[in-house]
Amino acid sequence: MNRILQDLSIMLRANLWLVPVLAALVAGLFYFVAPPPPMHATMSTGSPNGGYAQFAEKLRLELAKEGFELKLVHSSGSRENTARLLDKKSGVDLALIQSGQELELNAQQRKQLYNLGAVFQEPLWLFVRHGIKVNTIKDLVPLRTAVGAINGGIRMAVDPLLHANQIDSNNLPSTWQAYSGKKALTALLDNQLDAAFFLGPAESALIQEAASYSELQVVNFKQAAAYRARLPFITQIEVGEGLLNLASNQPHQNITTLSPVAMLVANESFHPALTALILASAQEVMKAGTLLDAPDTWPQNLPHDFASLTESEYFHAKGLPLLQRYLPFRIASLADRYIILVIPLLVLLFPLFKVAGPIYRWRIRARIYRWYKYLRDIDKQLGNDTLPQHIDQEIKRLNTLQDELAKVEVPLSYANELYALHLHVGFVLKRLEQLKKAQL
Image 1 (cartoon, rainbow, N blue to C red):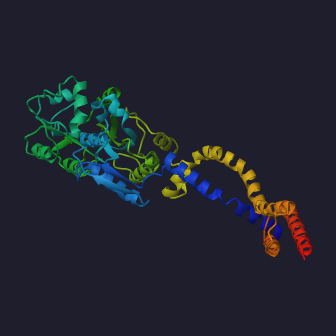
Image 2 (cartoon, rainbow, N blue to C red):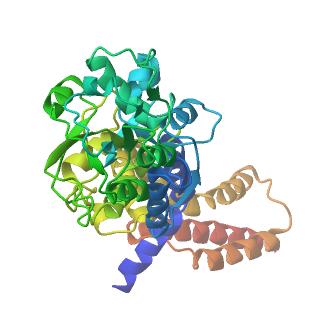
Image 3 (cartoon, one colour):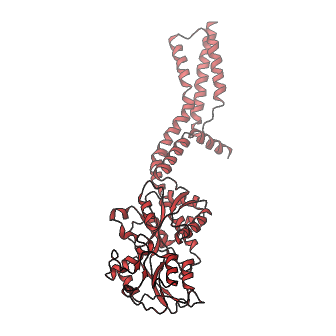
């Protein structure tokens, strides 16, 4: 056993040159072919008190549990978020975009953005004063109606509805107002408006406040299925009686409303390996569900016109990659991403190990053969009678050589060559001693 361990030790020491070569090869492969994913990203959200910002803050806290830093940047909404994603100098990697935003982009711009998935719904609510009957969008034409700011998220959802009803969004009725939010709610209550559109989750403070007033009522979109068929970027939501507010019984009956969705979109600066981590964190944020959504409903891979990442398609189909289910992201992502490099790495290592055998034999024999040069020089001098007069020094040197050879370690398979060198040293030493006697 000791002899086997000794041979193994010799073999390892003789092949130590492989260590730096392998280290350089692996490092080059990992860092240049598939660099590790960064542990930080920048996300454009929305107004500080809006639904986008609230979701993004929850996402940031969830990602922080994995040691990931998500920097949040507020914006005016979906349009500014999209502009930042398309601007390579903005430093933004991720953003929330309202579905339907893609209609404003050309094909080239859509190819530059990657939809990771829809993360929550943004229901469109139409509140009217009590007693006013609204069955279709066209019923709003003679009414005093707030339809949202021109560049706002509400108009992004409302304008396609208007177009579907052949109403020109660029030439609205004179009684319609281009604002919404708190201002629109106040105008409704003061009888300055008859109807107003609002956009946001059922839990949002503004929607809850509007639902608390009995003099207002939520409109039922009876044509929701027709809109859904024509506008694939929206969904239809069933809202049960009293779901928004039980005290005021809002809505007064079961209704259907329309909803765009908030999409988590990345640009080309986003590292694809982060996809599963981001989506899993978004899933955790929405895990408990909402008033309108059952638990574990979001994120979803809804139809869209943006490019897709293989990683996001895999997550929506199968969930987290296998290793990320059991290991921290930093470790699992590296292993999961680099495992595909095993085959090319083996291809590179095969010729390397193929030459390792000859190099190993050469290095072992070099321990023995390097002494033969000295013996050959002495042998030539003996044959030519040109040996220096200081034979004693050569004899002493050969004796020292024998002591050194006794310390040389080689595997058993090369022991015969080592002992052959011992015999040759002894032979030359004997000739020198005979020459010395002859000189006396």
